[in-house]
Image (cartoon, rainbow, N blue to C red):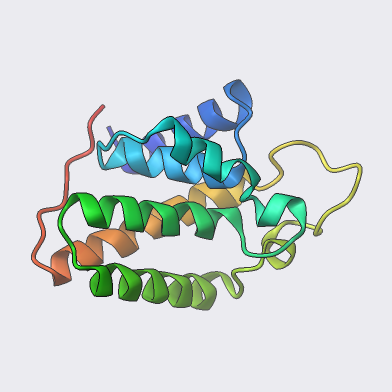
Length: 151
């Protein structure tokens, strides 16, 4: 299956069928792509991470990927210093690409009481493609085999 199609399907499922926030959707989609199980506590921890509970702070799409980098990096045996640098580099690259890592800047129109649910669906798909590309480049740089998408 094509990665973008897989991401589209996952985002739809997690937003519209499960009603997850962007951080959880990002985290669960990345875990599906890289075939790693997440504990229920990790999912619980991501519940309020969509811009710090809609406060508008760090974007949940960034937060979800940063959480994933720590989880997956540990799983594949990366040293803590490499995980920390990968998180830094990801945040820096995300900001350069999307012009911000703040939810209130990235969310179309910021936050309004009349916003429909899952307003960032299109951004989520773009951010996940960006995240996978970034992670795969890290794997290549560190001579780590890139996992194949499990369908």
